[in-house]
Amino acid sequence: MIISHVEHELSLSYRMEIKKNNNKRKNVRSNVTESHLIPTNMCCNLGQYQHWQDRLIFETCPVPWHIPVSFPTRISRYREIWLESTSKEDSSVLHGVWFGRHEDAFENASWPPEEKHIKGKHTFKRHLALVFHGNCQSIQAWGPLADELNALGYDVLIPDYRQFGRSRGILKESTLYQDARKWWDLAVHYLRYGPDHITIHGISIGTTIAIHLAYDIQSSNRLLVLEMPFDQLYTLAQKHIGKILSWLGWPLFKYTFDNTKRLSKLTCPISTIHAKDDPIIPYESYQILMKSLKDKEFPFLYEQILPSGGHAVRMTPFWNTFLQHCYPHIE
Image (tube, rainbow, N blue to C red; front, side, top):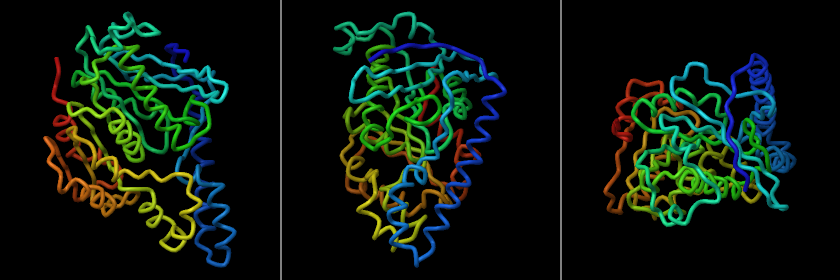
């Protein structure tokens, strides 16, 4: 694996590219969704659904590599990080951005990692939030969240999934989980954050990746923060394309995103936030997920259920309270 990091500024062409991509995604999503509502074409649409599944689930927004990323309103430092696979089977290039107050994360970085870092003997006690974003927009849209967490004393690392932003590669459920582990290993072994000082933070569909990573790591000390989590993809499919088509098309689903089984096996503290009127991830799906924790003893669960807020809980007046609970202020 090859690691590099750079820093750039925003250009007008980037804004135009994003606007163009957004319009294209809206048209594709509208056409495919409407066609699925026609019963007479159901058999044809099942095959079409498999073909268009990535576009229905992920509103990818690829950005040319030569167009720089920038966060002009930021006060804290930020750096771009590139992970390039050296495997012949996987030609992926992953892109992420580190936002932080502690530049020594890069001054002392080394690859391959030293033996003492592999064994967990980390010389710095910095705190990091490893954030997995939702199913649309690239890193460029997540600067405000990084600002909030930096203000509370946390560094932030936000990667883009394959085919989002500047990341490239084949998008599959298995690669999403594998890539998340790569970013975790980079944070621990390259940037040298202590494993118990890393908060795993998932947003919307990113909660699936966050839960899987927490399950893979298995630590009782690490905090898991989930914004608008859900039980599994099948429940969301019933909401958005109907129960009949979901039942018929389920064998063709490329993704399952089954969060219930993994979440029930975690022992780490968990904080969740969800709105009852969420039109994207229904509250009923969240309730099913939470039932898996009902009989377990956690050190844990902090829930914030909002009467309203839709799929934008960060825009509500309750957000700061939730954030401060999950991320106690660090000087």
